[in-house]
Image (cartoon, rainbow over all chains, first blue to last red; front, side, top):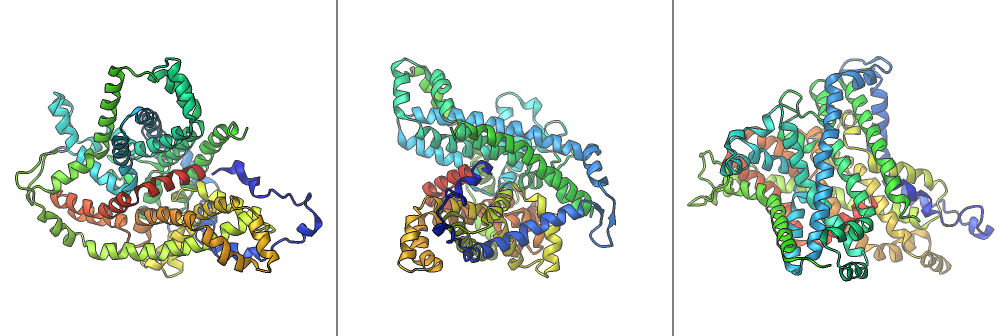
Length: 311
Length: 274
């Protein structure tokens, strides 16, 4: 993803090196590159090119396809269901990106303050656990949590909110938020741990200076921790945004996009169009729009967060 | 920093809340899994007589033995191939002056941002065309290709950090690229390779979309992919469903608890690099 670092591998520019070295161009190096690249070309690039091709056809996967120009793309950008699935992905960012990043920042800052290393280790392990289990399994855990007789409703009843209990994932209004909470659960530990490692790199003497100046927790967080974590926050935001835009496992195992299209996301839609509705062309067009969308969101972010780090 | 007692206590309360939030769903599953079979559990309640035997039944019903075997086969197929080829590729991109390598590198970087949904539909038809649908081999080949950009990128970053003089010294001694690679560079890369293998293991094991699309028989899938089938059949039996799901997620959790430090380090490095 770090497109900014492309030229780094070529420290010896071809024009400036001595002729003797230039003669040492290593064609044999291709033998090292080719095996891995061949796999990548066959199983990633080839289907990607095929997706571009499919996207201009009306094809059911069985009979002969019909060239229809950009009609699939027009449909992706005008069909209310498809557009709303993209909208949902952006809504999910509140839970997949904003909450885990802010929460992770708070947790990492709190863990730094902790006198007990042991407690910190336990906290880190527990927070990171959701990141390790498969997304599909996380969904199953939360389907049970959010069910009518599940723990969420049990807790709500216990604190006197019994009137609002419901089957959360099956609710037209709250379904998408419930899916979002699953995402927040998965991503919180990732952000916490990543930001913790970033805090570890901040010079301890700066914290010491802040302490001598009498800065409180919030003040230190604002003036020492936040500025020092620019790159890590960038990575958190980037990775979690991709996880929101390209979400599939969690949605597939928790709601399948339902009820109706209330929790439909692009990834789920691609699967349904491609494999259950046999609209291969439309599925490919949506998949490519999703890919471009991710690039459009990510590249400026990369630039913004990397720019200053390169000095 | 000066923290008042009040601040410190509220900090610890917040941390504890986050910790509970993180493991509550797993505890909730465990509590349901231990209820007497055939009952309909409600919320979290520790049963008077925890039915540990449910796990034995779930092991059989969820067919954990063949699933474990299947996932291990997939990992053994994917991880060594990716590790070897990515180390070679990363070496060439990071150490050798290969003409035209920039194009290869740019194409690989493109692969880093590509969502798995982008290629899954054509991939299905392609794998079908190869006659590899419903085979582990098909899934292995697909995953090798999918993980390659990250793996090469990771290894390239390692080889960029190795001083070039090492190669030059070896070539003065008359060693060719291949001998230098096998005897000098590859052994030095071992730590980078091993933490990459941890990530590759986790990703292979947790593969979902490609597993459910390319393989119909749940017993040939990854553990994660098999969940789809298991839930489909047992969605009404909450006790069994939770016991089985816990068993299915247990291997990654156990491996994580053992290699915790390495895992967290690798995942952070992977995120920062990727």
